[in-house]
Image (cartoon, rainbow, N blue to C red; front, side, top):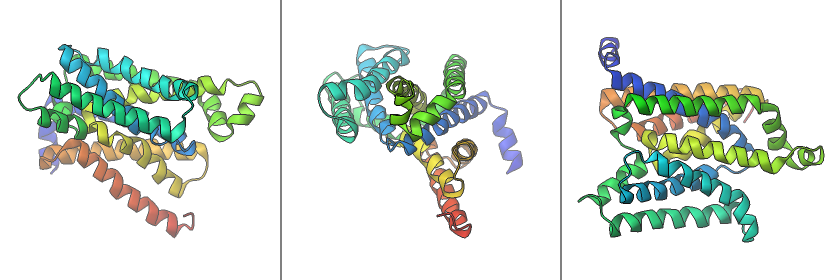
Length: 279
C-alpha cells in the first residue's frame, strides 16, 4: 500500500488534488462551526445550488474560466439571502428554499435549452455529485485556490473574536456596538467562496457535508468553541486526505468517498462522545 501511494504521489495531479482538498476542507470546517451553532447549516446547501446556476450560465456563455461567473453569482446569492430576504419578507429556511430550488431549476433549464454538449444529463450529474476534475487541476487553478483559501483563513483568524460573539449572542453583540449584520454577511460571502472552490472536489449536492459533518462530530466530544473549531479542522482535513487517497487507489468517485469518510468518522465520534458521557 505504501509503495502504491508513493507511486501516486510522484504525479503532480495527485499533489495538486491533495493541496486543494486540504485547503478547501480546512476553510469549510472553520466556517462550518459558526453556521451549525447559528442553526444556519443549510446556507451552504442553498448557495451550492446557486453556484450550479452560475455554472450553467458560464457553460452557455462559453466562458473558459467559469469561476469568473460562478463566484460573483454565488456571492450575490449570499447577499440576497441575508439582505434581500428581509426586504421581500421571507427569511431563513424559506429564503434558502426559494433561492435553492429556483437556481437549480434555472440552471438545469438553461443547460437543456442552450445545449453545450450532447450529454447534458451526464454533465449535470457530474456537476451535482462531483467528478474527476479535482484530479485534473491546472497549476493556475491550484494557485487561485491557495490564494482564496489563505484569504478565507486569514479573515477567520483576524475576525475570530467578533465571529465568536455574533455566533453565541447576536443581540448582545449588536447592543454593544458590533455590526452583527456585517459579520453575518462576511460569513455568508466566505461560505460562498468556499462553495465555489469545493464544486470540483465534491460536487454541488455534497458540499454541505464538508461544512456540517466536521462541526457536528467535534461537538460530540468537545464543548468549548475553540476546541470544537480546532477538532473540526483536523477532522475535516484527515477525512478529505483519506477520501482522496482511497478514491485514487480504489477508483471510486472522489466527492462521494470523502463524504463517506466524514460519515464513518462522525459515527466514531458519536461512540466516543457516548463513552465519555458527553452525548
